[in-house]
Image (cartoon, rainbow, N blue to C red):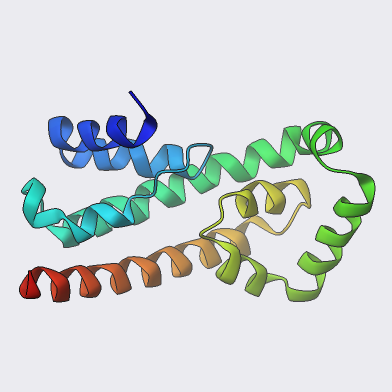
Length: 151
């Protein structure tokens, strides 16, 4: 069974708690996002707005964990995964764009780890993560609502 089927099964069997688990772990390591479940909320019997709230909160909590993992373990991990040359480039981009790097890059969960590795100010990281997740969530809810009316 692949990860996509596991995610769908979690949501079908555990409802909002399944959404929470997917959102939390998505921010740390796994690739399945919460947002598509808002698009199919009617088919799985869940409210897209509640999925949105649960998704944002679980993503932010997972981002919190990812940030601190990057903060405390990051240099050791980063030195094994990426070259020093790439590390310097990433650091330069992060320093140049700051909070905008998080706002734009937030869908890519590596940004949470990178923020921790680079010791980006935590309060700015969490605020940017929350704003980015909330905007993505609202957009997906409206898109899902629109398509559910059509189909």
